[in-house]
Image (cartoon, rainbow, N blue to C red; front, side, top):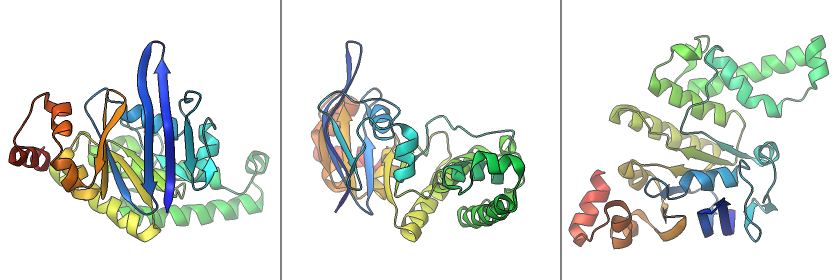
Length: 267
């Protein structure tokens, strides 16, 4: 069963076509990779799914049986779609636990007016949410830093916090935009182990955009490849690693089959 179905997705910015007729199916419970050179349309695709950009007429995005084409971001988030960004949007002046609670805010069961007056039900709800967020922080390995200002965290910890804050919204679909950017190989491994653990525990469907090809090849069950706004290949990591079109998209030249596989495994 597909959790996400995309048909004919297109986007123009003036005279520039960022995406052209993209068809993409993401199976429920899968880890699906999106790769491609700079400017291939990967982030635009994420922005269309999450409601940041409006698609062109004729495009269709269906999530969990609901047509979300053109819906605003907050409605899509409430349906169960969460994402991280290339540029981390951490509230540095807030503590780690406060950042997590911001991520959960859309699911709170009280009105802004009730929060202003601090009624008993609000205080009870906040205690429940805080306990739940602490449990999630413990799962991702950040519980000891709950009261630390987020601005004092290391790069690897910030990436984990961004992941945790997305998970605070209790998504069905988690979209990770270059989660390994700027991280050391050790921290990339820690992040990936955490993603796998979250995926297994919560039954998540995950889509990953990444420039670190080895990360995608080691993690994803299916990989889609974009170039100049078009999908040029899709398949298992083994199939993608043997596809000359993928190597041409990255390097602009032909390579022997064994060189193709070596490149994709080591990149």
